[in-house]
Length: 338
Image (tube, rainbow, N blue to C red; front, side, top):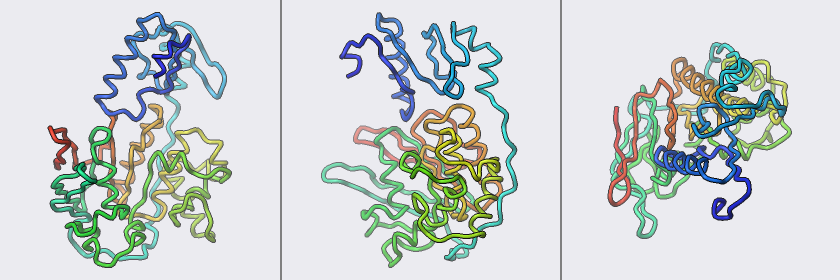
């Protein structure tokens, strides 16, 4: 629609964000054609890797001010630019002792088990004969293109989808529909996704944002005290964020906010950390910080990771199971690879 309007200036703001691998390739091709046309294009990028080959000039911003501008190759070699794009990395700290959990798990058995699960909406089949077992020593990457059914699958295991009833789904040793509430299920998860980030309330300190993870609220409405404050501080230190505890959450960069929300997701020591595109919208530096922190959690706690991705980006090194949505003529099939 923007191209059909034949604008004097076309502005593309991070056009590759949120696209799966095939869509990224299509978008890159379109951008390349635009750069070789008569249209003037202004493209906003978070990292130098996203700058198309056809771009001739760059303007680099730092803290809202112009750091450098000029021809592409000269700026990419400018020490000021390379330093900006590769800042010092804070050390990770020791993870806190697990927070008390108000529930018990069975002594053995998988964490999640789905057998021949089907989901249809009218005439549309979203999931067809899905089988998936997440064992206690596994960290899973769920991947597939946009619209393939990943969100529907996750809603079945987090208690958000009523179509789980009557199906062979066992969560944390309990057959779905045997009397557990949605909140019985949700208390076992820590979650982080882009929508949570965008919807998070304003005007809170970083430590308060982390403490809200104890209550699974967007904002802080319950009484809390020194125990929660201390645990939140320990998680910030563990993820290299100790100096930000008393800062305003709003004042942090987008990437640092996302890291704080990771601490929020972990503060109650969940059984499963569910990360839905946690690197979406991050620059290269903060994407590295996020993946490093996830691996730190996986290696030093009993929390298992479910990492959801539809892009061509990296996944944490801890991943040892892949649940892949593969295209077929009538939709997608779900394949589990160990």
